[in-house]
Structures are given as C-alpha cells and as structure tokens.
Picture 1 (cartoon, rainbow, N blue to C red):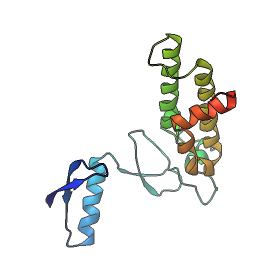
Picture 2 (spheres, one colour; picture 1 turned 135 degrees about the vertical axis):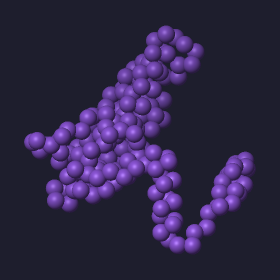
Picture 3 (cartoon, rainbow, N blue to C red; picture 1 turned 60 degrees about the horizontal axis):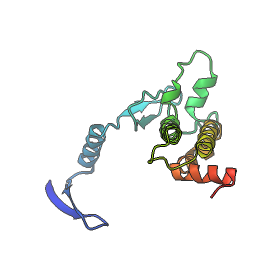
Length: 171
C-alpha cells in the first residue's frame, strides 16, 4: 500500500492510496472490509433469502429488488402478507429522500413566513412543491419502474421547485 497524491477535476490535490493484490480473493476481502468501515454491511432478505448490502443505517428487513415469484419488491410482498414482520415507513425505500426534501421545503416556507432575507421562494410555491414531493413519494411506493429509474431525479430540490412553478404558472 502506497500513499498517492491525486488531482481533482478542478485542480485541487487530494490524498489517496494505491493497493496491489496478489490474489483476487484478497481484493474481495479488502473491498468487503472497506465497505463495512463505510457502513455498508450485508443483510439477508426475509422473503427471497438473497443477500444485499445495506446503504443506510436504517433497519431494512427486505431487499428493494423485484422478487421474480411475485413481480414486485420484497418489501411490498411483506406489506401485503399476513404474519410477516412489517417494515417501518422510515426504513422503506425513498423515505429518506422524501423526508429531506420535505424538511428543506418546510424550512424555506418558514423563512418566507418570517420575511427572512434568506427566503428564496413564495409560500404557494413551497406548498405546491411539498404536495408534488408527497405525490412522487406515493408513486414510488406503487410504481417500481418509476422508483428505480426516475424517483431520485424528480426529488431533486431544483426540479421540484421548477415543477411547482410550472404548475402555478410562475417563472
């Protein structure tokens, strides 16, 4: 292992490391432990029994991949089956993104109500953006293709604000 100075796209220097492996197994073991150090650990799905990597600290019980037997994600299968442990809403897919957007829009609305100089949007734009964020979140819970392909892009704050302004007929 040797330290290396790398250069970013903007020209600033950053410190990295270069590791050489004699065997592929050593690479996989190192990658596994690097992932564990970053908080990504493996977990077994309670429905399909496949292993998946946790990406957040939430206690996700089921994987978000589509189950071939049912054609829907395993979390959806568990939600609709009896006698299955239910996953909390905050641990489900897309909730963290929705909560982050909701909190930022609610904060922006509060700034506007208090006439703070840092407020950037009108109250009606914030209300419409909150409504759109809720609609996108609910659609992601039902339409799995949308959740995998378009949900994160639609939940970007700038896209929500632009969509809200377009719906209200503002620039």
